[in-house]
Length: 123
Image 1 (cartoon, one colour):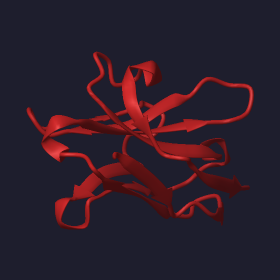
Image 2 (image 1 turned 90 degrees about the vertical axis):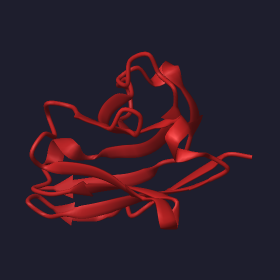
Image 3 (image 1 turned 30 degrees about the horizontal axis):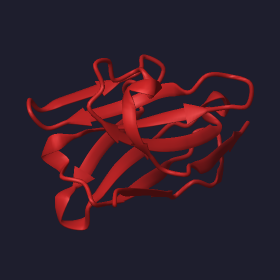
């Protein structure tokens, strides 16, 4: 059974940093793309960052390039999202997803989702 469990969300001041974790079970990393999405009430889920192994590929939304970094630790079965220089507009529920999407930005293309972790950035 595949499980994705996010953690690390918190309330921080603008300019601060957070590291989100997505601990996985039941998945083989080489078979899936792992991505982070975020969503605020009333808006669509937005792709933030994505990581794929074969071929190795990292992708980021323009709004987070240079500030966010996606990575993974195979030994810990965990995918991370390092977030720096946080802005109030980064406030959202952040979700981890795994799948074989045709387009990494399309949430409907993912098979597995975590329950989300809340990030709140105050000005």
